[in-house]
Image (tube, rainbow, N blue to C red; front, top):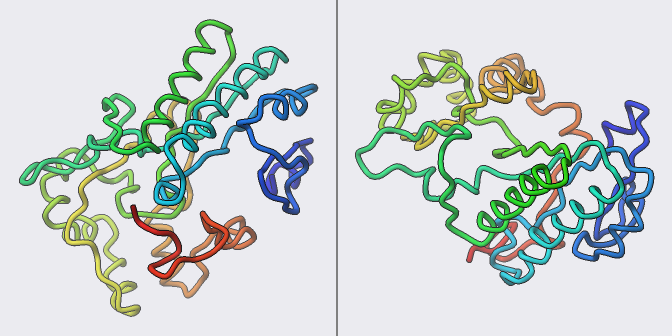
Length: 260
């Protein structure tokens, strides 16, 4: 919403909570609320969801209501209103068990062709929502784009420099592989008392997004290391503006969110 407003775009923010960027308060699980918000809309950016950290605090029915029924409501009303584009933010969690290779196997090479094996209600409902988007594209002609996003912060396994040849070593010796790709990382980590993961079990491949969407990520691992080395803030301007956002209204005794 910040970016759209800054660009001069007319955008309506929906949320279950009040905020400076929320124009209408309500839930996507409420079909009548969604219907009231849809007239005049040209594109839907669907990010409403219960996340994995909510598994311990919300029921499986809650996940179905928000992630599945909420997506269906948006798709139904978007199609009925003649919306020209529907962008759904999904998650790499739909891959589930496919993300973790067996002991002794190389790191997993994760592309859109990997068959999802959801391992919790979050992954199951997001996969179901993806299927709904594909259904509405096929039967109603609604232009849909599904984005399976990973974490919204830099990771060494986001580096495009990794290749399939790195998979065995990156699983057992992440330091060696990352050091070859981003030599400066050791110095930056040492100054901060940080250590690299012993091994990395998956590598996300974003070639399709680069090719089909002309996406060019700027905040990769090497860029973050360069910023830290220069003594600069590694966060983007948008990240600094948004700040830290929790998944719950309060913190828990064992951390920002409880584990199931």
